[in-house]
Structure formats: C-alpha cells, structure tokens
Image 1 (cartoon, rainbow, N blue to C red):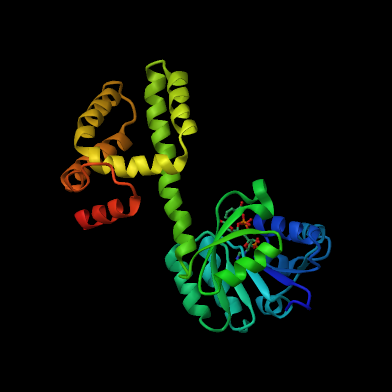
Image 2: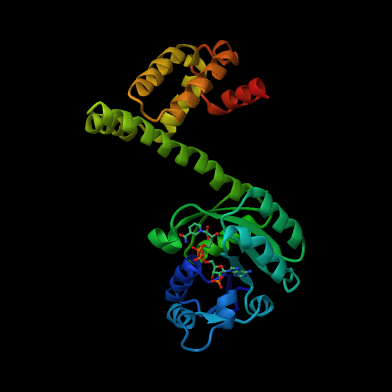
Length: 296
Ligand SMILES: NC(=O)c1ccc[n+]([C@@H]2O[C@H](COP(=O)([O-])OP(=O)(O)OC[C@H]3O[C@@H](n4cnc5c(N)ncnc54)[C@H](OP(=O)(O)O)[C@@H]3O)[C@@H](O)[C@H]2O)c1
C-alpha cells in the first residue's frame, strides 16, 4: 500500500468523522470518503454536502461503495447503531480492509462485530478517550484486536495518537467503560463531599485542600496509596467513614455514595486483606487479585 495513496473512509459522518476528515485533509490525504444514511440521500447544496466539501470528503451512496473506495474504514456511528452498520458493510469487506470501529460501545458489542467480520477483513476495536472537538486528530485513542499494532502504526503515521492495549477485541471498549467507573464515580464523590462542605461554609477551603492533595502527588502514587493503603487500613477507616456519614445525614445532605463507601470499607475489612497485607504492598496487582478472591 506504500506506493498507493491512502484511501480512507468513514462509516458515519457526524461530529467526530467531520473533524478527523478535516484534519486528514489538511495533512494532505486526498482520498477521503464517507457513508451515512443522510449523506447518501443528500443533494448538491444540502448542508451535509457542504460540510463534506469543506472537509475534502466525498460522500458515497452505500456501504458497499465505501468499501470499494477505501482500504481503511473508521466507523463512527452512535454506539447502539454500530453492529447494524457493520452488518451492512461486512459483505463488501475484503481481507485487505482495515475496519476500525471507534463508536462508544460495550465490549460485548465489539466482540460481536469482531465475530461478524471474522477473517473477511482486519477488525480493530477503538475507543476515543475524550472529546474530539478539543484535541481533534490528536485525541488519545486506545486500540485492541489482532491487527491493532499494524493499525496503530498506520494511524499514527497519519497524525493520530493511538496506543495498543490488548490483542483482544472488546478490550479497548471495556477500557473506556472502566475509566468511566472511576471518573464518573469521582464526580459523584466530589458533588457529595463539596455539598457537605458548602453546607458547613467551608467550600473553598475543602476545594483547596483536595486540590493540594491531588496536585502535589503524582497520580500513579495516589492510585497505589488508595489501593494498597485501603487493603491494609480498611478496618480502622470504618469508624471514620461512619462519622462522615453521620455528618452528612445530620445536615440532611446527599449521602448515597458515602453510604456505599462505608459498606465497601466493611466488606474490605472482612475480606482478610489487612491480615494478608499488614504493611502497604508495593504493587497493585497482588492486592487486586487477593480482593477478587475474597469477594468471589
Ligand atoms: N464526538 C466526540 O467528541 C466523540 C468522543 C468520543 C467518542 N465518540 C463516539 O464516536 C461515535 C461518533 O460520534 P459523533 O459525535 O460523530 O456522533 P454523531 O455526530 O451523532 O454522528 C453519528 C453518525 O453516524 C451515522 N450513522 C447512523 N447510522 C449509520 C449506519 N447504519 N451506517 C453508517 N453511518 C450511520 C449518522 O448518520 P445520520 O446523520 O444520517 O443518521 C451520523 O453521521 C459515537 O459512538 C460517539 O460516542 C465521539
């Protein structure tokens, strides 16, 4: 493929595909195509046609046409439509095609798409790890699948910022959802704790204190402290969490997450991890494994 021009296609032509296409076009890629149901019906002068023109992209009428025009196909549909979109293009895919599904999806949906495509083409699961309008083509993207290394080298050579995390399709999608467990959970915890701070008239002081903790210590160390420290010290943290819960409840504040934290600390204290790790362990993995064994 090195002597031939890069032929890149998008399955879906929404916000993400338009931004990527525009950046690829600016980087000098001239063979850019997209298929979307509304794009397929658009007449010259329709807004979607104007957007396509602005991004240097040609809209095609069918998924089959997309497969004929492009060797690298990036699927960017709504997650719940991704399997249906893959079904529509699969019969037109050939072994030289890369089909990279970057829709936000469950790991199971990605495994189904991988099984559907099988050996007909080279499938890669991709997760976009942030808002595309902010970092555009440089947005971090994680990839997984048998062909992920090849695809990562190719996409990075086109200016993207991808990283391979596993040979298993589904892992990239799982990573995004697992990240959400932490990030969305953290936002809930921040709401709950800062509401309590506001009720006490110490909002700014608490924000400053939390910020100093998170700003001053490398986050890798914070993760290690939270995991290894909790395994060792959960039994004595129960008392503190009970008091935190009492404080929130006495102020009639929102306390669901703190209630869950207290219950988690009790489970951890009963798990036997404090006896197994009387000193904070040096690495996370043995602690996670011991925790899994304890609660399975
Ligand atoms: N935008 C971001 O910043 C961002 C960040 C991270 C992840 N993502 C993920 O990337 C994916 C795309 O996001 P987006 O913001 O670009 O979404 P979007 O603006 O809603 O665009 C979705 C596109 O998919 C098309 N589509 C629907 N059914 C299709 C089918 N069967 N075959 C081909 N195309 C089809 C739609 O076409 P019609 O308009 O004709 O229906 C539309 O062009 C989503 O899964 C999203 O979660 C996006």
